[in-house]
Structures are given as structure tokens and as C-alpha cells.
Amino acid sequence: MKPLKAINDLFRHNQPLEAQISGVFKRFFDKGWYILGSEVGSFEKEFAQYCGVEFAIGVANGTDAIELGLRALGVQAGQKVALVANAGGYGTIGINAIDAVPVYVDVDATTFNMDVKSLEAVLDKQDIKAIIVTHLYGNLANIDEISNLASSKGIKLMEDCAQAHGAYRQGKKAGSWGDLATFSFYPTKNLGALGDGGAIVTKDATIAERVKQFRQYGWDQKYRSTLCYGRNSRLDEIQAAILRIKLPLLNEWNARRSAIAGLYGALINHPRIILPRVSGADHVAHLYVIRTGQRASLSQHLRASDVPHDIHFPVPDHRQPMFLDRFSDVVLPVSEVLCNEVLTLPCFPEMNDEEVNWVAAAVNKWIP
Ligand SMILES: *Cc1c(COP(=O)(O)O)cnc(C)c1O
Image (cartoon, rainbow, N blue to C red; front, side, top):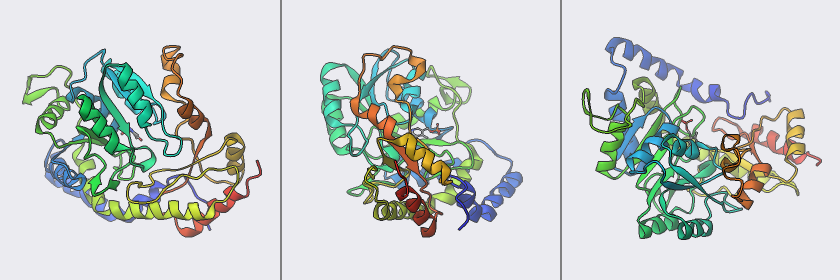
């Protein structure tokens, strides 16, 4: 077996599509239209249909999707947005971009997703305008309960689906619960472009219209801005065309990711490692994340064994250096422990069983 080159080997992922994707460039040369044309329009229709919602709007990336999404939901500077602190910081960055205020909610120790009890406690004490729920590592959060809670209190709900394209529960896809949902098509995501890309999906025609304006200078028509804070955040035609080639393959890729996670679950057997529960259609295994109290030792062992691995994510949002001591009185016991204990193993659709076996064997050989 050749050694694994990366935790997510994108060459192996995209190489089989090389001929088809090269065809895109040829078409573009012949056509001479690059921004907001038929490819973006068609992708938006196809992706909305895939998610089971009425509207999808392509934007430049997943972080812009969060920022524009918050604006489209009517969140104003100074208003509070509840979110978790263990999901990479993207929600916080979107909130900062509009000068809103992040309010952090702790997560559940088994799912690593937003803890409903902690959310209830926050909603009881504070005036929250919107909630961002991240479906972390590909695993749908407790979204039924959270969406009931949000609608009973008249709070807007945004799903961050950047790690959960195609996950579904009881026939409902990621992105179909919230008032609005955001996606990233960063190359490593379950559905990835060959560059940056993102989308917002929604069932609400008014929200969709607002997002379309925010992504293009606040225009309601050419050269006429009716919304403040509009800017340029568009999905490229080329990336949209590539995403249209890839979307029909997403379910197959997700199934293979889940199979790999299942194989890890059967093979890794180490008393100091806690494995994630990855089973069923509501977990699309974007990342296979294990947990151990002796992470530095495991990481060193894996490095010595040439097993690519990473940490998603090491610094919780409320402890990011940019905040100085602004959140020093905020304590999130579970999130803080998880940031010190999680470790990600390779899990991408092109990995073969032999490679999964090899990674699992290397992990099992760890002597803490
Ligand atoms: C990747 C990611 C984003 C941001 O997407 P970009 O396209 O890289 O801006 C947002 N949220 C989550 C959970 C992500 O994993």
C-alpha cells in the first residue's frame, strides 16, 4: 500500500472527473460569460431541489453565507446570536462581521452538537435574536427540538450545513429546518468546488430575495441599491458548472464516507479512545473525529507512523485571542474539554478498505 498523502486527498477525489471538468473550461471560452449566468442559475435550482427547499442562492463562500444570512434574517448590530463555540469559529466570524454579539451555548458530550438544555438556559436569560446551529462533522444536530424551541419563542434559526451536505432525518434534508441555511463548497467539503464557493438555501421567498440583493451591492435592479450593507459575494459560473457535475455523485460519496466510518468503528479498539457514533443517514461522516485525554501522545504516535491527522478544532471561539478577555467569565465545560481531546482521522470517499485497515491498525498500536 502507498502511504496516505493527506487527511483528505483531493487529487484522488477530483482526478476521475478531470475530462468532464476540463470540458467546462472549453465551454466557457466559447461562451464568454463568467458571472451570474445560466450555470449558477441551474445549480441554484438543482441544489434547492436536492435540499428539499424552494430557493438556493450561490454566494462566494460559506462564511459570507453566514454573514449575508444573518443580515437577511434581520439581525442588527448589537443584537445577540446564540451558537456553539466548538465549530471552527465561522459563525463567530459572521456575527463579528455585522457587529452582532455572540452568545455561546455548550454542546452535548456524545454528539458534540448544541446541547438543548444549555440553549434553553441561554434563551431564558438573554434576549436572543437568532440561533446558528452547526451540524458538526456531518452529524445533524438535535434540530427538531431546536427548531420547535426557536419558533415557539419567535427566534430566527440558521443551520450551518457546511459539513453536512445531504444528511437527512425522517426524509428532511440538512438545510430544510431553519428559516435559512448556509453551505460551503470549499474543496474539502462533502460537496466541494475547485476553489471557494457557498450557498444559502431557504423556503422563504422574501429571505431569498434579500440574500440575492445582499450578494450583489444591495441592488434591486442594475446600479440601484435599495439595501445598505450589500456587497459583492457571488458564486462563479465556473465553480457552479463544476458543482453541477459533482452534485449527482454526492449521495454515493456520502455513503462511502459512512462506510469508512463504520469500518473504523469495527476496527479501532483502544481503551483510551472514544469513537464517534456514526450511523444512519443523519450523519454524512464529513470528518471522523475520535476523542482521547492523551491527545498529544496519540498525535505524536500517528506522526511517527505517517498517519495524516488533524484537530477540528483546537481553540473554542470564546477563547480566541482576538477576544482578549471579553468572554473570560464564559465557561463551557464540555466544549473546552472537547477542544483539548478531539482528533480527526482520514475519511474521504476514495480511501479503500486496505487504507482504512492500515490507519485503524496504527491507531490500535498506540501505547499512551
Ligand atoms: C468550512 C466551514 C465554514 C466556512 O466555509 P468557507 O467556505 O471556508 O468560508 C463554515 N462553517 C463550517 C461548519 C465549516 O466547516
